[in-house]
Length: 101
Length: 221
Image 1 (cartoon, rainbow over the protein chains, first blue to last red):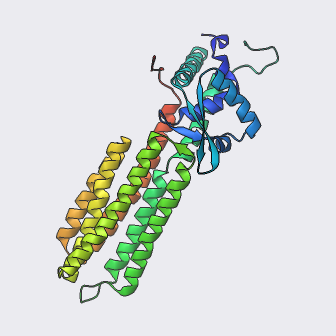
Image 2 (image 1 turned 60 degrees about the horizontal axis):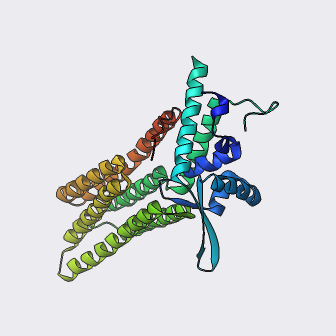
Image 3 (image 1 turned 45 degrees about the vertical axis):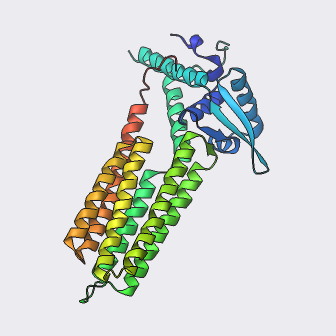
């Protein structure tokens, strides 16, 4: 395992934090855009850009809906996204163990 | 997209810590803090029931002011629980939110029925002593059963322990009789919740240590 083999979609710190946040939810649970933004301290534009990249990789599912008359966007990790995150953290742990020996 | 020259080199330890901290922050912002809820109810029961116990006169009835303090403490517990839980779970959707909402309504409905049952007993001519024993017993019974249900819904065995404990409190508090009932409710009931603040804190520290070493990914799910 080398650094170059780490998933490039998740490897960017901003996207890693997005995926880590969504992975903290239980399977099938979704987070609203404002709540996710608050948890990450990112600007709306910045977060949208990263979410689009994660959606393109099919790691994140974006659902646009209405609550009353207010439009709300919900974000969730796809099965693929969750697996990618688990593999990424496993790879990091392996790197850490390798470096420590 | 391999690393470019000049890019900071990867530090796996720091990245794992970043992940852990971010996930802790996410969990704290989306689910109620057990320590806060146990603390609020522990204090409410301890203060409220101690006042009832301490003010019980020779006629066996607590003073009016003690009932006011008790009512105020319980009301404060209810308000705190609702505000805390609604705030924490706002902006979430999905199975957990649905389970949480059903669980919240279970408490509400349980205590509405509790009030109606007590009203019925009073109408049937139950004495002051029976009313006092029944209200404490039924309250502990509802609390105990709901904790057992919560343990099943959230797969949390510490909630199960609390549920069993509260059922024991219900039985013991009723058998010892007034005014010792109030002392049992304060120390075993309220005290039990306060012990759970410490247990919850210890579990949190242990989970944090365990999170430092992520497990092997589960493939294909």
